[in-house]
Image 1 (cartoon, rainbow, N blue to C red):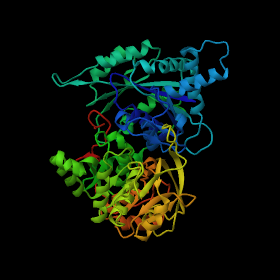
Image 2 (tube, rainbow, N blue to C red; image 1 turned 30 degrees about the horizontal axis):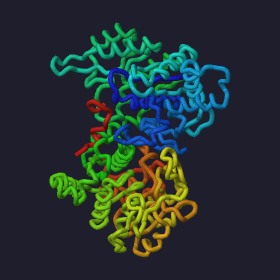
Image 3 (cartoon, rainbow, N blue to C red; image 1 turned 90 degrees about the vertical axis):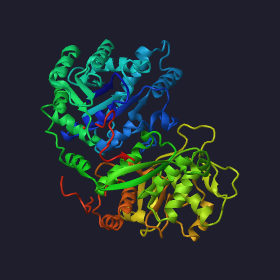
Image 4 (cartoon, rainbow, N blue to C red; image 1 turned 30 degrees about the vertical axis):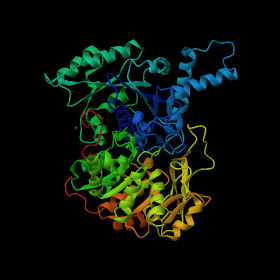
Amino acid sequence: MKYVLVTGGVVSGLGKGVTASSIGLILKACGLRVTSIKIDPYLNTDAGTMSPFEHGEVFVLDDGGEVDLDLGNYERFLDITLTRDNNITTGKIYQSVIDKERKGDYLGQTVQVVPHVTDAIQEWIERVAIIPVDGEEGPADVCVIELGGTIGDIESMPFIEALGQFSYRVGDGNFCLVHVSLVPVLSVVGEQKTKPTQHSVRGLRSLGLTPNILACRSTTELDGNVKEKLSRFCHVPLENIITLYDVANIWRVPLLLQDQKAHEAILKSLNLKGYALKPVLGEWTSRADLCDILHDPVRIAMVGKYTGLADSYLSVLKALLHASVACYRKLCVDWVPASDLEDATKKENPDAYKSAWNLLKGADAVLVPGGFGDRGVEGKILAAKYARENRIPYLGICLGMQISVIEFARSVLGLQDANSTEFDPSTQNPCVIFMPEGSKTHMGGTMRLGSRRTYFQGMSSKSAKLYGNRSFIDERHRHRYEVNPDMVPRLEEAGLSFAGKDETGHRMEIVELPTHPYFVGVQFHPEFKSRPGKPSALFLGLVAAACSQLDAVLKKCTTKTCKLSNGTSAHYENAPKSSNFAAGSFACIAILVVC
């Protein structure tokens, strides 16, 4: 097994996750099998109980693991399926060490950070690195490890020590360290400054790790004299200093690495030059080129609770992007804070109220993503009502599905107090209820999590057609509440269709309004399995409906010519005739425009 470690210096948020994913992709393009591990030094066992404002979205894996959003980048770039153990946290490591101590595995010893915690970290890495994640048998060739945080953070010290020991133990030729650092440009003088990176590398070396490759984030390509200076003071060969400058979309990052022969430097460090092939990235390059030339917009109103931080809905944004590119449209996301749609805001802040409604009414489609808590719920219900009554394409995910059912019960059935017991425990018409198997005392890891099977109740629904008329699908879940099965007969009699259910037939998974151009709600999270070139079926349906392509897409999907995230190839009409990382981040600003 070969290992590539990606660390970060100077500041957080430089894009280590995208860099690690891009390294994995280019190695995979060289014919190697790749797996990934993300190390998060926080004490939480997992990301499940963190606020999206604190740490971005919680990404959910097939096995129910609630993990850091960077694992979503790994899965999307590499098209692999990771496990919860591919996300290491301080909490998990310390818990495993303490469990061993209680069992008596360290009997007679004083349990310490070194060697017990550092050994546990190394053992975890070696154990997880050999787990197949690409559907093939046997271990991967290369494991890409990303160390979260910044060099010098006190909480990451045990991991730095463990990785220093690990690099020595596996030996030269089996370990390559890529250090991502910042080379800022001071606006006053316009000069690229190397001192922050010099200090970062010096700190890394003082902790026992020596970088093989420097990946330097900057607004523009590094000048030759700047590279020479970094090489001289950081003791890194000139050809191993890579510039990760700002580009139009993140799909260009692997191409940056390829153009600067980063893969050759990595393969040389890992003694793999004789085994690896020349990278094949033709399809990836075409997709990146397509991103840059799209100009016809499709406007999606994202009505959510956490609209102040785009990373809160990262996978949703990526799924919209994948679908928009498949439909040859430039994605424009209009962020609509759900609470701004409510009557209370009309009184307290009329300008915010007017702005929110203008954005909603100007959109080609409406998307209500998942969330927890009652803030903004009434605004989401109003958004669903607007989309339903005005025949605007609508996709509700998790809570977005539940509120669409509540809205229908209120507006069509006349049940004005219809609600979820999450928001009104005493409601007389509970449309959404707490799941019987859920825990009301413990929050972490107690939801209905991971991949679950949904069975279609016939092939006439739009969702069934989008999934290629399959009898069932497997999608990832994360919820505590469900549609009340006792309310289903009344809702169906009034015209709502529950097109997908679980294996028992009592848990509602997909809801549709058959008389609407596209009104779909799902209890699961289809965004987690969307991939570049293989968009999620339901996101593709939403975007296609928004730009008047739904009938063509449905026809292609039912004839098996539609390549989707469920593995089923698509050829879309209206393709364009012609064939810089975003400033300060790796945002795909050419496609994802926050308007």
